[in-house]
Amino acid sequence: GPALLFVKTSQGKEEGRRFYACSACRDRKDCNFFQWEDEKVSETRLAAREEYNRNHQPSLTHRQNVDRYKNFVLLPLSKRRFCRECQQLLLPAEWEEHSDHQFLCDISTAQLKSPSQLLYPLENKKTNAQYLFADRSCHFLLNLLIDLGFRQVLCVGTPRLHEMIHSKASQEEEFSVRSLLLDIDFRYSQFYTEDEFCHYNMFNHHFFGGEAAHETCRKFLHEENGERVIMVTDPPFGGLVEALASSFKKLMAMWKETEKEGHDNKEMPMFWIFPYFFESRILDFFPSFSMMDYQVDYDNHALYKHGKTGRRQSPVRIFTNLTPSMIVLPEEEGYRFCTVCQRYVSSGNQHCEICNSCTSKDGRRWKHCVLCKKCVKPSWFHCNNCNCCTLQKHSCEKTDVGCFVCGKTGHKRSACPSLSRT
Ligand code: SAH
Ligand code: ZN
Ligand code: ZN
Ligand code: ZN
Ligand code: ZN
Image 1 (cartoon, helix red, strand yellow):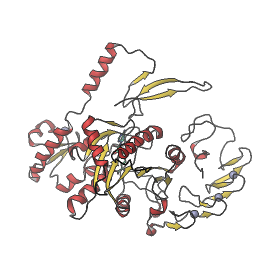
Image 2 (cartoon, helix red, strand yellow):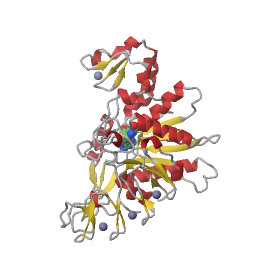
Image 3 (cartoon, rainbow, N blue to C red):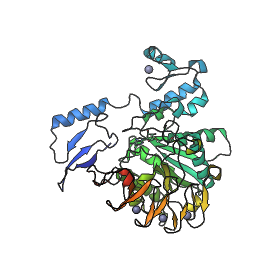
Image 4 (tube, protein in one colour):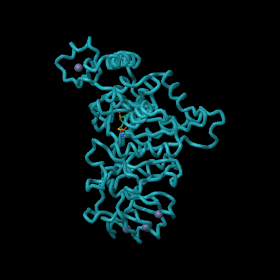
């Protein structure tokens, strides 16, 4: 889909030069598209690019994949193979072609219902960054949505939640939640119909399936008989917040347009799952959002697992525009309700009388600094040189690399002043 317009800034210069680059691949190794904003593009180069794009389309269309799936499920177990190298369900006529590839046999219906287990996670940090929810977190999310009364879930980059909803719907008669997956991972088109999955880029709001896919999404967002919709998204953490926010606003606008009365002044309910250190960035774009203390855990991410068992605590949280007091967090995992803040907080998150808020962001107990007039991480101390709280071990000279969170120079991510905005 469309490229994004970036700006190259060099130190000391006010204005940088603007250029277009791929929205989805943040690593030039994955996609080398680059073009200065003011660059004249020759006919030859344009033709070459179009040729390149044509040659890099998936070999099968979504429609073809859906037809293949229909044939696949008719096969006896002994003839159901999945090529691990091509990440593709194989029909018997194709075995030959893949004879020197590794494959899985006897693909059961249960396996077909959990493609996220069958497919290997695309862990490439800069592009797909596929980190799958641990069962505990996925169940928690789903139960929460159901308890809140939602019956339609727009899953944007959350294949595992989508698959949990789908397999429940096919197994339990009285389970009436529906789900639509929007994801850039086209492998999922082998397992879901056009009404269940849209090939989508969340960095530029591009539907690869064109107007028909757009319409599928629009239809899905339309709330019939009071079946309320919520969007749940878990984007790659390296993603640009402004690009994501711009796409999510477009999805919100789509939801708004589906209702003749225009939903008054309401926003489409949303869960945006993202690390806590992006709090201020997200609030810049969505002032109605607040961050929940719940720590989201992942299966294939060694660092982002639950703290209880002595492993590291996950920095990943839920940002939502729903009223915080409605988001009930599990008491058996140590969360408790703070009556002053009117929200559930981590067990270690103490209510600070001076800030008048439960101030911890990472689940540990934070301490109040009277000089900074705010609560800070337990490991920080007040440095009179820098005139702020920071790590004990720091050099008072400022760094000149931009901060990962706010982009400003002078401090690193861990000391970003926008982190602990209250
Ligand atoms: N925790 C989620 C997965 C999150 S990983 C779960 O278990 O369901 C991030 C997801 O976003 C992956 O599914 C990945 O394929 C998808 N993704 C990555 N870049 C994307 C893009 N540009 N547009 C849409 N989806 C993208
Ligand atoms: Zn193969
Ligand atoms: Zn509190
Ligand atoms: Zn405080
Ligand atoms: Zn201080």
